[in-house]
Length: 456
Image 1 (cartoon, rainbow, N blue to C red):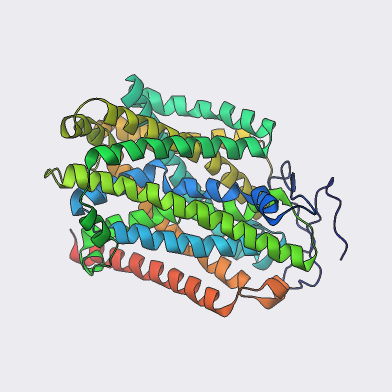
Image 2 (cartoon, rainbow, N blue to C red; image 1 turned 45 degrees about the vertical axis):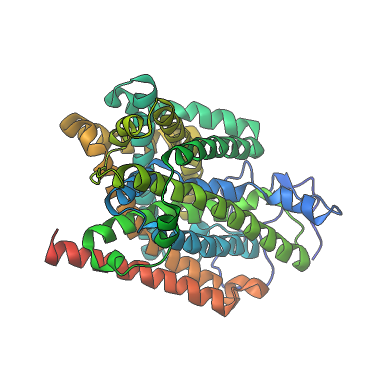
């Protein structure tokens, strides 16, 4: 097969793949599809640098405000015990994101397009609705997180802050007009700010490092304690986020690689390394949130921290000075802005891929954000800030329940020789990802049974 010109965008069709109902779907995010050239004839390192970026956009899911709520609650209530869940979530994410890259490179489809091309409409339309519900739940967490960040740093009331969050459409428009590399640079810069903030806060908290190491070991309490299981599912839902699977399989295709078999396999290796390194880096931040809560709140007997603003208020007296709470607020605001960018792109991919309905990113953002603002405003008006933490945790548990509807099709597609050709997933990878899907479904059923029958 001849290689495409590096001045043009690659073709979507992949010869020899007869398992799809359509042979050449219109690309999602068409304005940036194939826009980043992988240099030909350069060193391996330079070609790898061309692939660096999508993994860090996926890693944002580790640091969105919903993750803050679940990790803060888990660390304050149970100390370092749930660090194992953070680690397990990281392993799940690495394996699943590698399947996303494989699907995109082998079939030139994102997960939403693959569902539309593989299933009849009575299956693909419900999957689209579930995916949209997951994105709305994600956006709800961002609305609340950014509003709390604005409140903590600038004293803006929460009910006003949630409406200010709608202004992020201008940020999205500016970044996308500048080019996809600008989007990636913006996200990576904010990730660096978040890292610096937590590095200082962890140093100030001086955690029990023996307890931290022990926390990465599994505990049966995670399954037998319904309250701990609820938080654990929230952490999984906040980390292995459904929209990330659609997002990664779409934005990998912003790279313009040669379509020879050797280059396609190289593209898969490099895209997988990009996401794996980014997710390992993000694990340190994800774990840092939980470690900070355990070392600061759990160790001092403040085990009922479920509100982000409550955690912020206690940091100053527990750690001394105003630096820690200020850094906390800055990191929270950065995480919310980061998640805003990635959720918008995921929403475009889902809508364009499932139903081939294309609207401007700004309009898409306004619609999704408007839907998310309503429950946030209701909760704030009725319960004030005291209800936002519980709403954040609930949004992440909703994401966990949506996960199987994204994971199961992803595993099935990448295990199909007819759909993937010579890039079909190896048996061991399919088996591990299938086990992840079964585990998440089993945990969800266990939680439902605990709530409905036992109660707590």
